[in-house]
Image (tube, rainbow, N blue to C red; front, side, top):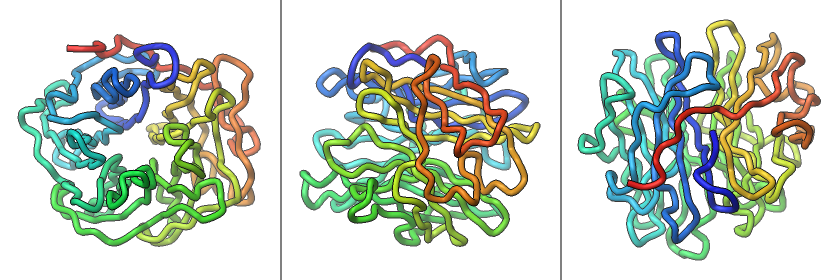
Length: 335
C-alpha cells in the first residue's frame, strides 16, 4: 500500500488483519507529516488474495475528535460481530486513548457509535493494542507512554491486560520493557503475539533513542506467561536498509493452509513508509514464523535487493515469497 505522499512523514502502515469468510480484512493507518495532518485516517479494506485490496470504509481523525490516529486493531468476536479498536491522540496533549467501534460487517463501521475502552490517565497514554482471544478469554498487549515529563513521552513499554468481553479490561502489569544499554533501550512495543504450545512468541518494535522515534525496528521476545516476556538477542531481528531503517508494526496472519502472511510497515529510500506483505511457510518446531529456536539472538536484516525488503534467509524458513506491496484504492487524503 503506497503512502499518501513522498518523503519523510508520509506513511501507510500500522496493519491489523483478520481472515474470515474466505477473505482477508485489513485495517491500516494513513499519515502525513507533523503540521500537515499527522495520522489523518484509518482505512479498512478486504482482499481475496491478501495483496489486492478493495477499500470498504475510512475513519478520519475528525470523526474521533482526535489530533491523530495510530495503529488500529481489527477483531471479529465469536458471535460474528466486528470491532475496530482505534488509537486516538487527545487534542493538544501527549495523551492517547483507545476507542472501539462495533458493526455487523467491516464496511459498516460508524464513528458515531464509538466508545472509550482504554482511557489512559494523566500519567499514562495508551495506544496500539494487540488483541487475541484464546481459551475463552481476551488478552491484550498495549503500548503505554509516560506523561509526567513531555520530553520523555516517546518512551514506551508494553502492558498486559485481560477481559471477559474485550471491552472491560483488568491490568496485569508490564509484560515487556526496553533494556538499558541495548538497541531497544528507549522502549518495547509488542506488535504481534503467537502461541505455540506452552511458549508465547511476541514480535515487538524497539529503538535506542528518542531521535529514532518513527524508525523502530523489529525484535522478538518469548515467555511462558503472557504477562512476562523476555527479549531475545542483542540486536533487532529485521530492519529496512533504507533511510532511518524502520521496519515496524509486524502483523502475522495465519492462513487456512498452514502458511502465515506477514504485513509490516517499512521505510523506503525516500523516507516515506509503505505497507508490505509476504507469505511464509509454517514448519514444525518453529516458535514463530521468523526465528528458528536455535537462532535466538541472530541479527536479522532486510536485504536491499528487489523492489522491497524481506526478512533474512538466516531467520526465515525456506519457501518465503518476496514481499509485495498491497494494492488498492487508497483512502482520500482529506475530507
